[in-house]
Image (cartoon, rainbow, N blue to C red):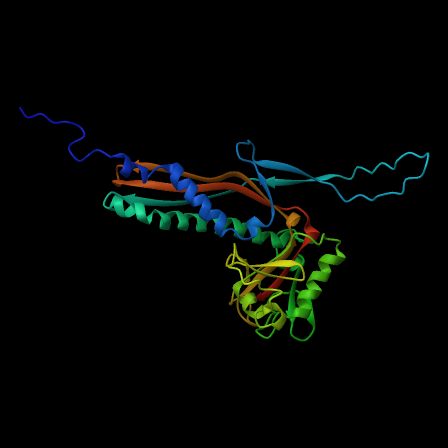
Length: 317
């Protein structure tokens, strides 16, 4: 009677093969790609909540107090307690999954792993930046429902910086140096701190800005490579280009000129990103598919923290 052994010859998975599917290895590579691809998420107030329970983060939001002159032999002036709080709901959960069938040559997969991890990191980073971009609807007096009720502007070819209304922007309404300075002044007038201000723009606005002489001078472009989307600095504000900026009007919705995107000028404390779970990677063999299921995911929440510390500028896409 013939005997058999299990697993059969060739059925063993050696360390070299198995290392390809070690979740920790994939997680590190995905996390590196994720951080590299983040644009807006790297510029806001980030709260690490890893390991903490609950679906809501309560953050104190005190109003700014006022310093008082201290007179000799008098008590100090106690600031009135006007604190409120901002609640960040941890309600964003995104995943990126791939099924890698056995027919895929494992040796080839080892060298190709970077393609999978880079793709996963980019996909998850894009979602985070997208969710942060949507917070533009809740700045100023906005309630999060529409761009037109928030601190939203556009450059009118005739009148300069103007309040944004839908189905209005034409291809002639290009951003100018004067309109950008007017936008900055609005932050100044709102007493927004001068440090840690950022301007995240779509590629189309980058193209427009490159047509303005002072924006291509050595004072703006330092000659170094683009890092996480940063392309230069003007008037003390770092400029970042991102393909993740939100679409505010589709071409069908804007008969005047086509698709419209939002560029966001903001201070770091304008928005909050609370991360309850950073990049997690898991693998599981699926016998029914004769392949390994690879999944990366993250859990987070976003919220507007200082509504007066941000503005959006609508531009042609």
